[in-house]
Length: 309
Image (cartoon, rainbow, N blue to C red; front, side, top):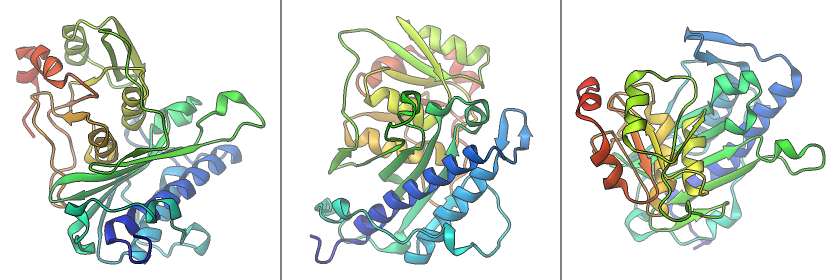
């Protein structure tokens, strides 16, 4: 395949190195001590210099190599010249070597939509909860997520000096998921992961209705899906608007690649076309297995409190 890889494989190979570059930017800003925090809509909706620089880097790097793709990023940034040091031109050779799933092999640049969250878990980033932080790049075609790249800039940070910092995982339905060891929660234990900083009665009622043996509250949508694929949780339950398409596109593609599912609280899929509204208004429910069980447990009162997407 490496002679003339499909457009989507070249895009994913670029997105991999671009995500790693963004992760390095996120680390560099933290180490500088100058986070440049601004509130967007309130104290739980923050933006930092790392969000801004990482998004500039991702969008400029990908649009330079793939000028016809549509890129939708979380941060609304003024149009300005991006400095050369933010541009990443590399491609991950090991991705270019893989065979593209047949259904995606003929896709054109202009048919692809890329959803970017340059720093998922910004609040946790500002509070030093660094293992919650991810960089998310999702690729969609025909409204469906077909590839996802998640960089964890601070993976291994608790190990201190000498540890190899950061990792990038990626996946593509029909091809597989790479960069981590797929694990499931043992036995029939139900462990629900949910929001750390955006809770309310509807959210907690819905979590309780799942009858979990344990509840894990962490930040970042990307981080919660990593909990699912690494065997630390069985369901990600967030019965609230608040999550956006750039939070879920990459993670959903990786979940699909390992047989998991991400839907709204009714069990309906979200769509990732360029013209959809950005908010996941009907909440997020993600699982590695047994999705129907969790959908069936959502209380009627919760469904009434949530709008359909």
